[in-house]
Amino acid sequence: MTPTFPLVATAVNFQLPVRRLWKPAQELLLTPSGTWYMRTLPTGEYYEWHLQFAGLTWEETQALITFHTDMMGAYHCFRFCDPLRNLLAWSEDQTQSVWATSSNLIVSLFPSPTADVMQGAQIVNQSNTEGLISQSVGCAPTFPYSIATTVRSSRGGAIGLLIGSQRRDFTLGTTWQTMTFSAVPGGTIDQVTFTLALPAGGECELAGVQADFGAVIPEYKRSEERQGLFTKARFKHDELIVSCTEAGLFSAVVTVIASAEE
Image (cartoon, rainbow, N blue to C red; front, side, top):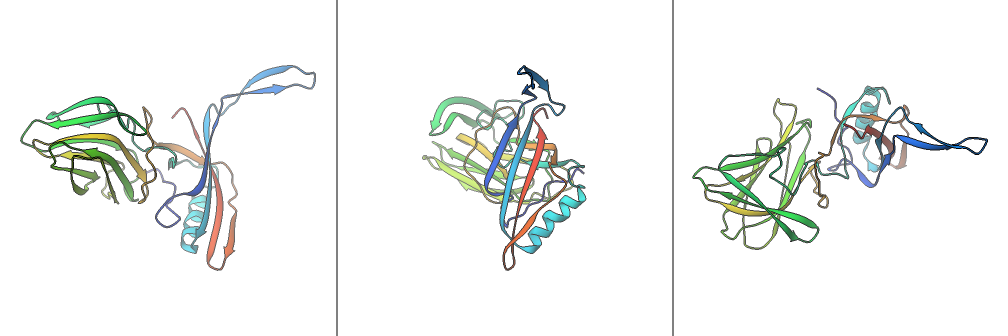
């Protein structure tokens, strides 16, 4: 099982500000003679995250130090959930193949359902059994995760949100409502499946679906073909600097890198 970047800072895994940079596969160099030339970098294109932690307890700080030591600094790879990206791919298009859909569900798309959402999805269950639409992400099941969706239904009824086998059901209304659920999925399978469940005869309209690492739902992030998990991330530096800001509280700055071609 590939290790996962640890959950620290109480209920969230990162504290603001967070910066993500994209590094190109080539750089332009100027020689002493004044000639410009393009050099291909051995790393290829990659992302670089600058993470700043503040107000950490000693237990949280120790978890970060232990993880950095176990990874031998920049030597070993680990799984990393991008805090600035939706864990789910195609957050506004449940017709894509990354979504597993029960045969009894009819999914159709429509434009601009709400502000900041470009495309919505209508889901209709035409059978007398519950229908499921789900997406699996290769995350460790031992951490808390969150799922959220903005949804309405002209028929009312209910919708279930699942993280692994953990579930919460919500009552639907005719106006847009944001439903959120957080849980530790648990289990022995080294992945996490996020699921929407629609009862027999149910109908709803979705305005985006969001999944995140941690128990706090941030603002909605639209996604297309890429999930928000990087499976071969590394620390950029061998050293880890931790500061004591006040009695019993600590801060740290960490840089994580991962190939953009994963």
